[in-house]
Length: 487
Figure 1 (tube, rainbow, N blue to C red):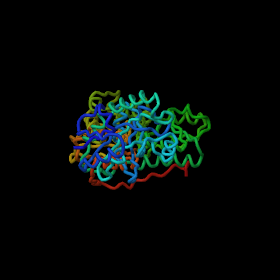
Figure 2: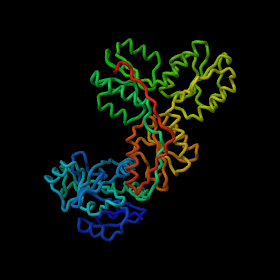
Figure 3: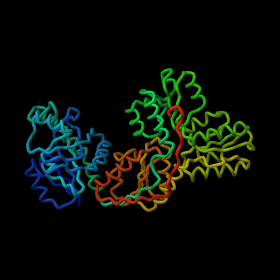
Figure 4: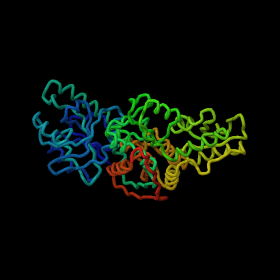
């Protein structure tokens, strides 16, 4: 059983329930004595501590990414998982190093420790750390910069720290209960596709060529991590063309835009770089071809998605969105003999085909694309996940909430009978979902950076030994050329 080690003794009333709780008392000597009594195995240390930087305030919580002490540095890889759980409880949480001290630090020493990058100090964690077993530290802050111990404010600050520690109890218990050995099956292909890589490179090259700022209409791809990184390089994301200064450089996102948006950009004299995925451009071309010969186009897709918005804009009076099988069974057009269909590129293949089958049955003369509209990357990722979904207890899909292809991966797993959750990064993984999951499937949507998958595996290793197996269904070799504007 994973011990919850409470330090010092006078936080005994903290509401920690569940796994075995051990109280050490104050200071290195008592902590070392407690560590000697504890059997080898996982442990999480919870207690009060001192903040080292002005950003860390009384009542805040610091989760250690590493513990520094006289015996060296002990890394804490599960820290993002624990910090995420604490934030979901409404606590103000900081991630960073915690340093061990043999005595209560004074203001000058506090500043010296802060200069090393540490966020908090305590007198027990370094003596309780075990580098060979799952280990974590949660410190509710009492004293900090400008508010040291032995001042009248210590009473109110101490109460704030104790309240935070009590609120943290469910997350502390969830960490303890999630500790176990695991097997992780990696679905491959996963993460970036050629269209996403092309779109990101277009923004990077536009910034190199024109300098910041370069404006991007909507998110270049649907991933918060990608967007934040490009913002750091100087990209400015806007909702509409009208927000872009006249004559500036504007990049169209990978999901494509309608002719009306292109016209608006031209009217403002913008220097446009088109990052539309070539597979989305193919669907736009199909809509124009069908409607030019007088056919009504059924667009199988989700009305709220930007790709669908742009595609409909090619011929808004002659495109009908069909979102599900029920809509396919009910839709009507003025001339049933002159119809065609196309698809949003990021749909679940089996669901989209079911909708298309209903349309083909109802409209025998229905024109179809010469090649499937759902992109190769979406199809490959769904098939790769389907190959492992039934072998695991839980599937983690890395991707942002507005990513259609990532959400479809969750649905694919659930149709295979395995629960799945969409996580923007490892901090979004719910520790409670991991408690009974000894075998985890892991994949990522086509717009999610590969490093997020690696970070998730690393965080899981902080909960116990992890055996990783790669299940490769196919190798992807697709590449797309860049537009001349950035060459």
